[in-house]
Image (cartoon, rainbow, N blue to C red; front, top):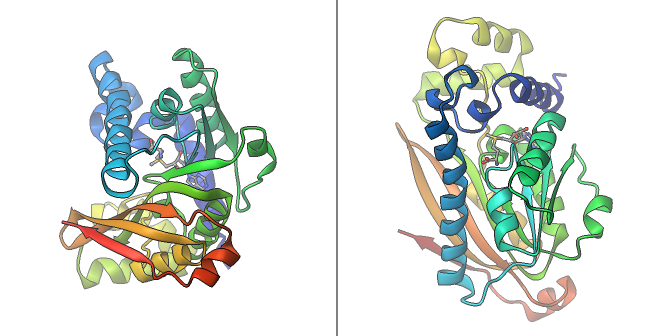
Length: 277
Ligand SMILES: C[S@@+](CC[C@H](N)C(=O)[O-])C[C@H]1O[C@@H](n2cnc3c(N)ncnc32)[C@H](O)[C@@H]1O
């Protein structure tokens, strides 16, 4: 049985050591050997813009007074979003499967003069130990991460993140739901998922469609809503983002019920889901 999770984590660690910014945002200008000062500025600015946008939507659609204390960024990479979160929250904690990414993230926090952030290495299980000293997590965030985690493992990690979110907390999570391309691309992908040999061949292939090194894993929107509902999330704003050739991502902004899981079950409140045009 192929251990996709460990293989993927190994690839992230390799990428983090060789081409970290490009691994995060795969545009040519972010390759290590092409980086200019302007490109580096654009890279960090993209995180500021993203976090501003996310917080504006949470405030506009879910809670006008939203002001998170402790933010948790799952798959923090080099800190593109963790640094803007640290600037806006009492504490910001990052988790990443790649030790080099986590180290670079801490380096970036220090470079920005921020002492209210930290990054830890994580695996299949999220260890709540190191997080405890920051206080209850009232904002969970993750972008460009779950799409790189095999779906079953990703859903398990989603449950753990939602467990960590305090009652009344909020979140933003992005998932890839449908890959671009037609039946042939899907058939190749499914073969790659099932056979390590086929996967190795695809990676070595000269045909770009077969070769895209980092696999994108798909999530079903109903499954995601089911997992959120199972953790007392009762208010969700859903955005569909087209990724070309029929592919799309789902971006979920959400609020967790104020009371305990038991109170939530007793209240029997239907989940509210709004789709942003
Ligand atoms: C494309 S980068 C995005 C980084 C960051 N979220 C951003 O938008 O700037 C994906 C990150 O997810 C991390 N990652 C991949 N699998 C992970 C896992 N199972 N648990 C935690 N982090 C993971 C990678 O090491 C990498 O830093």
